[in-house]
Image (cartoon, rainbow, N blue to C red; front, side, top):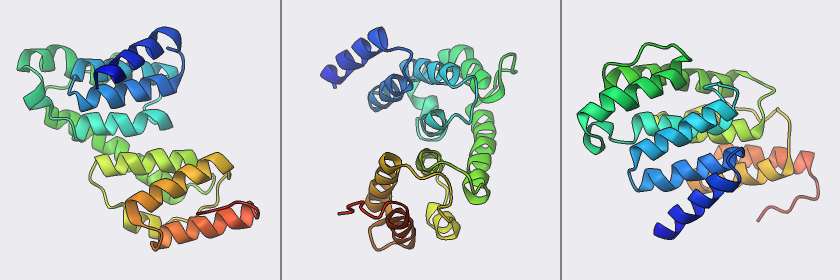
Length: 199
């Protein structure tokens, strides 16, 4: 982990305008339970995404921060109230948002974001596969039922070979190759990319 932290610091220094840097920063520091570093990564992602809380690279780490990280245990109460809750309120509610008074209130606001991400996957026919991938990670962090959602989902949006491979790999890892969702996406990929090799 120490080596990963050094690499992340170098990435932030030399490629701080790349969203992938801050996604990786969040990933590394969330495993170390360094909440303030995670919060800084979220803030950077939010700003790079045009201050859009639905920015596809932000939704998964944001939801993980709100629902999986134990803020009440890992952060002193004063820092949580004076730094974490006001800062996360800005990301979830925009500049000038009223700071949250409790972790439960923050989770309630984050739950509304998750509802909209889920609705977008269900209802938008033009959704990019990469948005589906990050949306599924978001739903997992929030503890939502992804299997039922994916059974109803029809992959209709823009197809990209790289993102198709990523989503297939994620679905295989999470649900298995025999799942209806993986089979559906695999069929759509072979229709769209006839020469695509799927192992």
